[in-house]
View 1 (cartoon, rainbow, N blue to C red):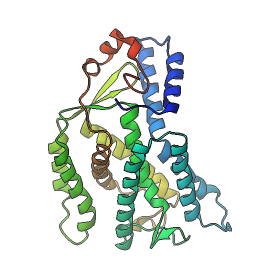
View 2 (cartoon, rainbow, N blue to C red; view 1 turned 60 degrees about the vertical axis):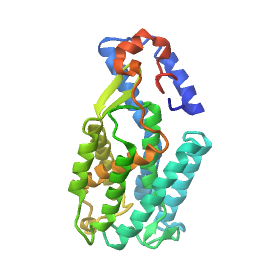
View 3 (spheres, rainbow, N blue to C red; view 1 turned 90 degrees about the vertical axis):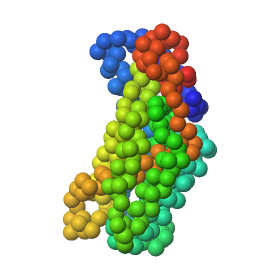
Length: 306
C-alpha cells in the first residue's frame, strides 16, 4: 500500500467523519463516489493546477513595466510551489526524486525542441538556458507530480501489467523518437502499436470510496493525455509558449498533439513505476464494492487500508 502523507491522513479522517452516514447503494451512493473521485483527481493535480493558475494570472494581470520579466516570475513561482509541496508534506521525498527526473528529461527535450523550432518562448528574463526559461521544466514536473500522487491517492492496482523491462524499452524508444524524427524516420506509429501490444490486456483498479473502478489502462492513458492537451491549450493562450502556427494569433493546439501527449504518458508511467512498482489488486479490490461493504472498517478515501 502507498502510504498517504500526514496531511492526507488528516483529510482522510475528516472525510470518514463527513461520509459516515453516506448510503452504500443507490443513486446517492453513486454521487458520493463521483464526488470523491473528482476531489481526489483535483488533489492529485494540485501542482499542475497551481502552476496553470499562475500562468493565466500572469497573462491577465502581470504589469508590463514590472522590473522582473514574466518568465522569471513564473520560474520563481514554480520553485515556490514545489518547495511548498515538500515543506507541507504534500509530496514525499521518495516522490520528489522522480519528479526531478521528469524535470530533467523535460528540460532536455525543451532545449532540443526550441532549437529546431518546434515551439518557442518569449525572449525575456535571465532565468533560462538558451531559449528555454527554467519554468518550462516544472511543467513536466507537474505531470510527474500528478502521476505519483494519483498512484498513491487511488492506491492503483493492475491486472496483467507487462514486464517492466519491456515497458522501459518502449519508453526509451518513445523518448528517443521525440528527437530523432526531426532527421530520420518518424516511428511514432510503430511505437503506438508497441504500446497497444504491451498494455491492451492491462486493467487498472482504482479505489475511490467504497467502489473500485476497473478501467482498461490504455483508456486511462488516453484520458489523462486529453486533459493535458486541454491544459496545453490554456497555457498557450496565456502566452507561456507558442507553436509556429500560433505566432500570428492564438488558435487551438493541433489535435495531433494528442498522440504526442499519449506517448509522453508512457514515459511518465514508466518513470513512476520506479517509485511505485505495479502491484496486482487485492482480493477485496477485485470484489469491488461488495468487498468494501463486507469490511466497512477498511474504507478509506486515501487508500483501501488507510
